[in-house]
Image (cartoon, rainbow, N blue to C red):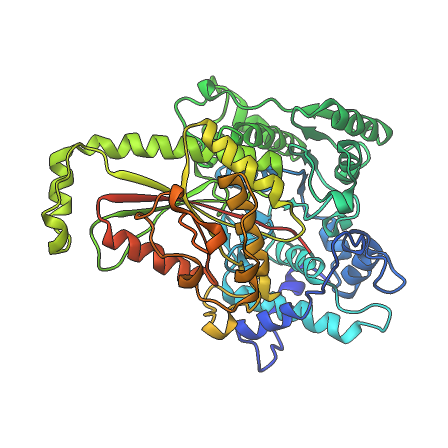
Length: 557
């Protein structure tokens, strides 16, 4: 079957119930519970008599895709940190070079369609439904007792390959989900170039408890004689990468971090000094891809600068939500006060350190910038606020800044390592959190959702014991002793019974955990309630700018 025939078939025979929410319900049925440390999440040995990659090859045959993916010109990227950012840089650079791009990343933050980009845009809902139901129905017709429907990430990987084949992309940039060698994306047999981003200690219960073991899994994406690039790595990890590359006759090169002085004044679109490492790897991967496809001569000939204009534009326009992202909140019905979200998904000690440095630097830069408006302009902007605020005396050009942490991590993470790391690194830069809020994430519901899904109050999790555990760790960090939270965990209390609701009134010295009074932390049952409370607090305090560090430590299942 030709690619155009595959595409044509995708737009036929939709089931009557083809709404987007119905598709999300179908996807949710593919989420299987996996216990902490269960290696089946990587090797798939518990699902019938087939291993994960063996099953993936069978699924490709069921979808008539096996021959077609061989025609994809793929960049495959693994790593512990920065692989998503590296892929985003690659996509933007090659799109600016005039190529039709396909990008597959994970996880998504709001809508599952974020994982699939065509020419820099999330795939449309219409096309997503066409490709989704075509894959779903073909697999449903052919599954057997010892070969059930693929788990969520395997299905999404198959769907990505189908989308890229049918959309006839010039380049497919694919981010590994977990590990490398046994990851679902490694069903790909042929790539033009592979990349390994910075390595660190993560998913140790699955990949191993040493850098050497983790590097071994990551290097599993190397293909015989196919060029590969990595970044400067710890010697323990680099030795393994080099040995595995040597066995496969892979020309492995180390890409240097980009020098900001050589970017002709261009600023990277993704924030943080660590992005110069990811951008350097992306540039090396794109150069190699262009050379392999014989498209490099026109770009690089007669170019006096270090980077073609297309590369610079790609580096300055790449985007990836939730990675060192700053969002200025627009509060309806209020022209006073500031609420700024600093979003990141740091979930390992190394990435938390990077996140803390980025947040501290961004907060200081933002405060310096905000102070430049001057006293008179601030008075003018505040004159539109509620009457009770007009009589306040605002002296000086700086507003009061309050840093608030909104945090959650899944129980496969170790908050006793992550939270102290964040607090200490921020404190070393002079940044201290006024409050810390612990809120369950959507992953609590084990459901894939669309961007338009509205969660009712009935969906709020009944069990907040994990969030109270996080709060206890935080209080211990703040006060140097164990906070007494057991009573709060046992009782079905609202947010006001564990927290006074004040963002600005009390100081940390007024905390009395033994009596259930917390001036510097709170457990709130939902994200929507948290944001409403933050906005209400800002409305009531127009002289304050709230800089909210939001860290959601995710993991793949």
